Structures are given as C-alpha cells and as structure tokens.
Image (tube, rainbow, N blue to C red; front, top):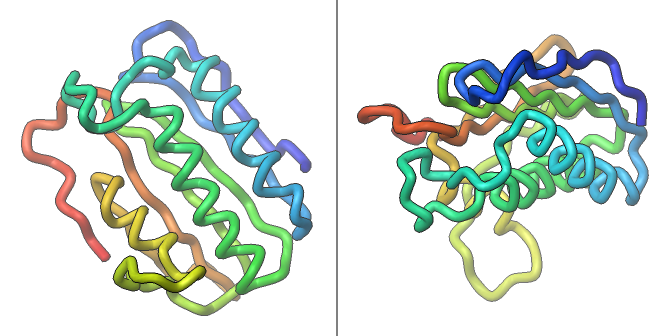
Length: 161
C-alpha cells in the first residue's frame, strides 16, 4: 500500500471532511488493507456513527460499515478483473462521501440479480446501498465510484447505473 495524498479534516463538520488517495498492489491482502484504511479515515474525519442514508435514520446502516462493505466489493472486482495496481480515493464534502476505485481494466461493471451463485453480487450490493454509483473510462482503464450521504440531501441520490 502506498499512500499518495491525504488531507486532514479541518474540523468535526462532515460537510467539509477531506480527501484521501491510496494506491495498492494487486494482492489478496489489498481488500483487507483497503477496509482498514477506509475505517481509519472515516473515523479520523468524524464520520463514524453517521448513518449511510444521510438522513439521521439508522435504517440506512452505519456509514463506516456500509462504506467498508462497498469498497470491499469494488476492490475485489479490481483484483479479479484487472489484476493490476489500483487506486482507492475517498472524498467527503457537502454532505456526500464519494469512494472511487480506479484500475487498468476496461470491463464495465454491471448489476447482476442476487441469486444463488457464489459470484456476481457485488454490484447488486452497491446498487442497493449507495445513493448513486457509476463508472467512467479513465485513460487506459476505468474508475468505478459510489456515493453515500453524510447529511440529509433533500431529494438527491438517484442511482445512475
């Protein structure tokens, strides 16, 4: 793991939390390392205890737990499909936590119905739990991202597959 950049949180207001970008080698331990880094950073930013729905309703699930889960899915996809170094970027500002995973793969993720198969449910979880998510081509590779609310968003958050 190589930390590329990170800005400390200037205060305890989740409206203006900060930015972190970390690059990982393509090895199985990268999923665990990314989860640990996500939890550590969100706690530093004071976002632990917030709900993922962003509206104060605990039905959305704990923001840190949901973020860890969804980052695990994106990182696992990067490892399985690109087998290259990848970058995890977290940013939090204006009531939105955005997580991005950039890799050298060109395969665009798609949502597969949650059935009985062992694989293919990751993007189903991202689609079900994120406010929004998407994918864009980024030079020779792609970036897959999702957003979660850290405060009420007044109607924002329509999913964009």
